[in-house]
Amino acid sequence: MPLAAVALAGCLDSGSGGSSGTATSTGQIHYLGVAGLSYQTASQSGTTNAAGEFQYYPGETLTLRVGNLLIAQDVPAREFVTFLEFQPELRAALETAGVNDLGLLDHRVTEASLLSNVELLNRTRFLLALNWTENLDDSDGIDIRDRVIDQLNAALAKPDLPDTLDFNIPQDDFTAENSPANRLLATICFYPEDSELCNEPPTQAEIDAAPERPADDNDIVPGIDYREDLENLADRITNAVRSMSDVDNEDARTYLERELERITRDISRRYVLDNAIANHTAGDTAIKTVEVQRIGGDIALAEMEARSTRPQDVSVNAWSWQEAEVEYFADGPSGGESELLINFRPDNTYRWVLKQIRVVID
Figure 1: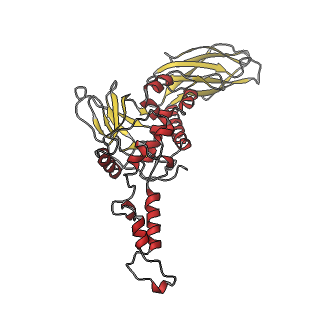
Figure 2: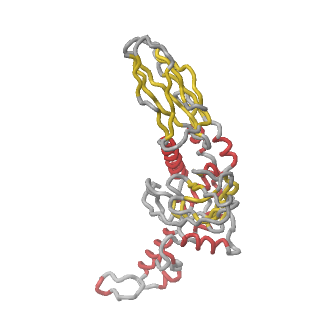
Figure 3: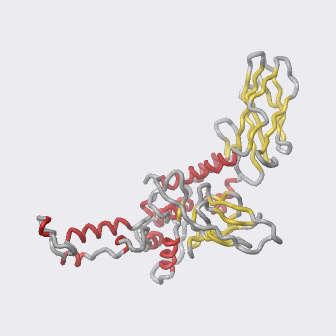
């Protein structure tokens, strides 16, 4: 199923309490947001808005629900929280970066390795299935509307329906025709309350008892429900019922990849090098420095590494994440050049940022 258009809705409620009046921080579920999630921290509670935003104090954890249905708990609250971080074992794995084709540490290698996790895919597919429209546009986040939440809560309260979901079961069980997830989805109408698609479909007995539609349109009597009309209505109502099969693993992975990459780009755009290109005279082998700067804020890095693409012309001497700088020297002939690849991990995130500077020897 393609990811196509949906509008967002929601509200952000700020809770009370906190650290002696200190302003709360704003976090976000994914990059484009998941609207309609109820959240609770030690001091804050509310509902995520269209941007998926919530309020928290550093060090708090999140409990997330759709209405009364528990989605995740004990999730560290931070600027960006993804579905991967809903699971403790995936959070732990994200702290160890993989190595990319450039030989540099790269969190995206680890992220990609986790996208086949069964619990992650089950949870992602279910939340995508709760989106107001069946398809999700590339520029929109998940929109879980109040009407959907109200119907879900009503279903959870019924004794013959499940009141919770276990996302950590085999996928064939989670997506089976009569699975708890599908039984809950079947109770939700994703149309306005007065839509005929929200009614029970005509029974086979009602269809059989209806008259055949006249062959001549001039013989049609207004207000009569003909057999063909009831058959068509039954098909439309049946086809309008949402199920887990409407969102497959490819849809889930595409959504996750999109959101993860946008978070990485957002964080990367906050950092620049003090120069994009550096020119040095042949024979000038003095140590030079390139500095990482944060746009509109103080730099705070946790790790760093650097390498030269042509060490025979330009060599890396040393780097310091504390000072956010790399030392290098040019020792090649006139006309030589190299790219310095400066890779670093900002504080308070597992994500790595790669910046490049071109060094030219005149």
